[in-house]
Image (cartoon, rainbow, N blue to C red; front, side, top):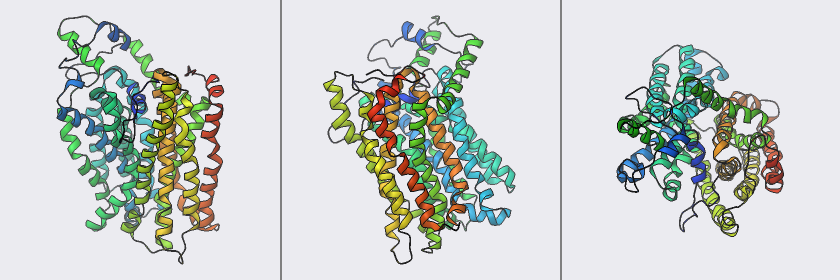
Length: 506
């Protein structure tokens, strides 16, 4: 990872260029759909091909501003709509139970399996995009997401609903693996970090705002559960129009196609070499999930807080209905403090990056230790338990509803500050070679836990231990996890030396 990244400018909250590079390295080489894609070796292209000059019109950095803004908005809006599709369906669970005469756990399958698809989709598209490019991923993912969701919404058969929601999540989520690369392609890093903040926030804002959107849309359409899916397709409609006009943004693919047009020869991989690269790209994140301690512990740490957002789908509905007699719309409004906390988390990461990491970069002449990325996680590690204990013990008929609702603010604050810090740390540790796989492994853990949590929340809160102790279980687990970033901050260098992969030795 480059240690001399651009410093945070005054008045701006954050520079996230390393975070964007994580996904970028998963998709270094792109194709066109106008001809069968030919795999290209990035190193070959880097040596043989380059822009004609700083003003090369084919360089995405030189495109008109409106065109670059459009290419930046597509992954942000797509990511928001994609992840909001997880939780807009939550408001429809009672209607699903009634129509199909199923239990709540079974009614939650369209939510859980849609989320489980996010574990599979990006891992498949990441290695493929290294060979065949970014635009192809958008052009495949968007129509499959729309078609499979439309089939699910149009059906009155529960099995078809579940199966096609899973297919929608699997086939539609690959854009999560290439969006950051698109941003880096079209902007200089000092601008990409700022333009990309909505893209970074999308996977958190989507699931958090989804219950609110779903509740209001269902109220508008007489509790017709199908609209909890149709509303997502409405949100994504502008993306469907915009991707028609998308151009390839990857430098390597653009140069490869231009070289072919000019009659130049660029060496390509054989079919067997291509297959090996794809298989290797598929297996590396899985290996990191199972056998790489550094990736496992930081992954579980950040995944737990992310999964707690999914647990709120059940616990918010149970607590605010049982204790305060809220309806679905009022429950959706309870997520607003969590969203405000996310914004605080972004600001916190930016502040620590400026006052700690960037100063260390200057002091060490670009050789700052990755552990300097962890200050925001140290701060956030204490906020998450505070928020969870607050939420566990304040719901009571004698306590005003605003008190437990405000517990979402420290939780959201600590969750996103820690997440951004851990992602930046992983990218600095593993560098350009393996950071994308480390981030992909983290995503696998996040969405796997997110898919699982809603399945047991209601049973826990409805058990004999009561809502206070049920909530406390999650809070105590978060306390156990507090030392994780502190241990990495203290013993990070020794842990890096024991990694199965090459790591930053600063």
